[in-house]
Image (cartoon, rainbow, N blue to C red; front, side):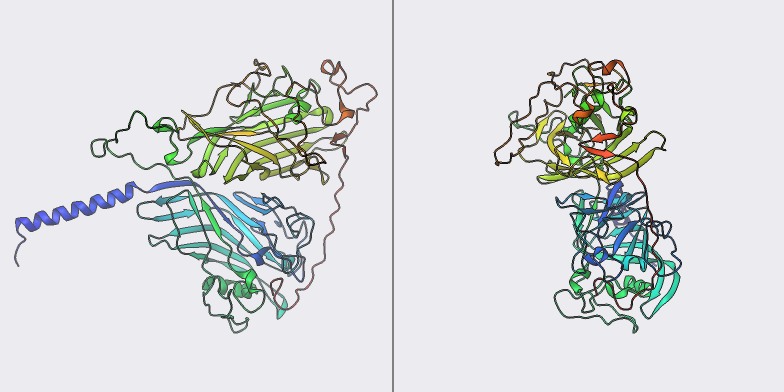
Amino acid sequence: MRRAGPLAVVALVVAATVAVAAAASRAADARAITDATLTWALNDTASAGAHFGGCNFLSAGTAGDAGSPGLWTRADPAPGYATQAGHVVVEKPDTAGAYRRPTWDTRCTGPDGATALTTTTSSKTRVRIGGGSGTLDPSAHTATIAWTGSFTSVLYGGLVYWTASDPVLTVRADGTGTLRATLSGYGTSPADPSRWVALAPATVTLATLTGIGLAGSGFTARPDYRGVAVTTDPADNAQLRTGADWGSFPQDFVDFQHRTGESSYWYSSGLSDATKVAAPLTVSYSVPAGPSPSPSRSPSPSRSPSAAVTTGPASCALTGGVRGGSLTWGFKKSFRAYVAAGFPANRIAASGGATILDEDLAVNGAAGSGAYRWPFVSSSAYTSPDVFSVQYGGSVEFSYPAHFFDVTIANPKVVVSGAAGVLYADVSLTVTQPGQPPATSAHAAEALATIDLAGTGPVSDGTGIRRVLHTAIADVDSFSFNGTPFYTAGEALDDATVLLSGCTTATGTAGTRSAGTPPSATPGATGLVPALKRRPTPSATGAPAAVPSTADPGPQPLIPSLNPRPDARGADRPAAGTPAWLPWLVGGVLLAGAGLLIVRAGRRGRPSGEGSAE
């Protein structure tokens, strides 16, 4: 056997070195993902009206065992209907297109929250799962992202349901992908309505994808469905393979649904096939910057002295996405004035990194009546100043003991696409009336406000890019008691300013103060945010109404009957003659004690045949 000559040995060493270097380069380009979000509605059938049971709907979390086929109630099964469980949120669009969590009473209604769904309409409800983590390699065009959490798909109002847990997305170099999850649930059958069997959990393909691009901060893709052929069980309806919408969810998914008794909801069978087509799914995330090239191997290009710099220093450029910044937003100035100008026991306090500013004071000289700065936490998407998603932290609490309420707004998230967007936040309202236990309504990751960017544009400086956002109330449920909202949808809130920065240290600290320190600035002082202006509101004749004066309005409670006396700031009590038990009035709404009547529906047998879509 001949031994390899010196040149052959050198060639082998060089080849091995190149291979090792290439592998090291690919490994070095792998990025850790920690904030991925998966958003998906499955298909229109999953949230359509049903022939029996009201509607099909989605619920957050893993549903408990109902024990037999029957309609869900508020309390059965347990756990049962929920719109948030851990990282999982269930939400549906309203008439303005803003997504917010439905309630038990609105889950079977259209965007207006009142019109009942029919078998030909869908609420477009979707699940949103945050906190996904994994790796993404832009060079290899591969990714693996996993989420922790569950959602449940319910048909016929609860007669049939199954749960998907801990989905995992795998993207391959050819742009194809697979979304898999652990499925569980209960089996029944149209032929035997009494059948009820707990199904063993199984790892199943929810969706297969093609043409996935990983160049940005996420992607939207419609899962493969049209033209996908499956083999159906002889006991199920055969697949129809004609028409524009013939197709199917993946084979193993259909096989699992045969065990639940609802397989033909997920492939074309000749009945309502257009509603069965898989809905687009969206995955968003922020991509950490890769390793910087060595200066000796990749020298920095020269720049003409006249070249414009639009995003400040290179370290603050948004080439690697949003890595810092802040949100400046005071929620609603009249509400700040209402609390700050009330009794001495009232309190506005910021915590968790949020700060109260000396800007846009609602009441002259009143500590805590300024706008708020919310600190940057993470960003799951950034394409341009017109397309981004940023999570902020901190909380602000409004306490008015004499009017029995405590409101907390926390962890706002700004999602902008084009000229519109949504501001999400955690909102908690606690009402404590005399002689009654506190009643708390908490909403997490609620679509609190709509965002309008009309008439605004990005402004760059040395710390990043700033944008002014016009906001208006979207979620009236978070500010409701006993089913009555305090505000109306579309009511104007304060303008907000976002600072989008590539610098982790950029926060926009000008004008801040400690939460417990009295403000030192005058109402006319300017800082990071200019004096907030309201857009003109059209009058009854269509002409713009007069813009409100920017002069200090003084104490402005929400309704005239609660105007404080001139000496109200010196005594923690309502005006003379006002009963101490005066209910909280907001906008003319009486907030009295709430009574809860729960009527448990009897279990009813399942009708034969397919459901809403069928």
